[in-house]
Image (cartoon, rainbow, N blue to C red):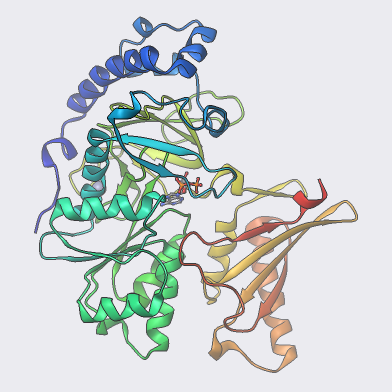
Length: 435
Ligand code: ADP
Ligand code: ZN
């Protein structure tokens, strides 16, 4: 079995990675300054010239880019090459507003697919595997990105796209899929459907899952691993920087290795923009070191996490990022307290509930309210009202301990919360309607 897709770089000594980064950034800044007027104007306004950037240590002199810039420059304003050199467009899912588009040259696609191939090999994939790609195909980067990586590794690729769960299961069982790739919420749904059909975890041939594109907790990982009988690996990415595979988990399952030969990473204080030391929690910022068509420098992701350079037993030398606990946009401020949906998910799974839940936030008489709707499994469902009330009170109290504020919990009937085939919608914030 292969251990690395590109061992020379994945296990390269730190000095070598740094040398590559230093060389690439000098070239990349010049490329962007010469070809992307939008960013040249930002650099000029800040008084930074390409010759001021002599290595990655100088990256902090460069201006940031944000989603707002991408929306303003939509569609061609950040293009780094003649459109004739581009072979592909992908688009964000639009989770937080108007979609933005990203362009790729053939070189960019190749680099991206190398990154997803590294992720597949890190999850134990090789030529003998059957890789079921149940991320959406199309403008979304999930399907296309993993598909390309699966080809590079030499897996037999099942290009299922998301949805049609009956067919997913039929092909999974008939064609002996060994690796499942989709969002974690869809993996949970597939696991639930398999169980309903009477399959036990050991009835499928799956050994691994590569799940990402949305936040998920360690509790959710354990749940999926148990229900599908697999080892579940996290994968992270975003369209603006390429797509899934910017970072990926190894067998340690302890943080995702960032493909540092292609992406330079910083963590900043989201309020001040100050670069934070390793180990601090903050917003991830990526600089693409060698993308040609859509070469973003210092792109603010709004994803909150922590970086670690601690040595990893897998032998990879790339820096690791923790699971993002959610985007800064996902953070709800409820009566002045910061709350992430992932905290609620942790409580629910720890208390023995399914990951089928929805959070509704509102404002009543100038005070924020938070209601959590939690689905009961069929075996938990009982007609005795008093038992329900006791369960609700217990969950409310566990959540109050975790969050510092008390949500109202409503236990609802099995199957009453919509399942997700892509990115799950966990929060409905009605306060925005009143603003
Ligand atoms: P959109 O921003 O519209 O959802 P994308 O489809 O490009 O567009 O999604 C990228 C975003 O998805 C990331 O910025 C991050 O918030 C989220 N994401 C991707 N992978 C993960 C992951 N493994 N864990 C948590 N969040 C993730
Ligand atoms: Zn590792």
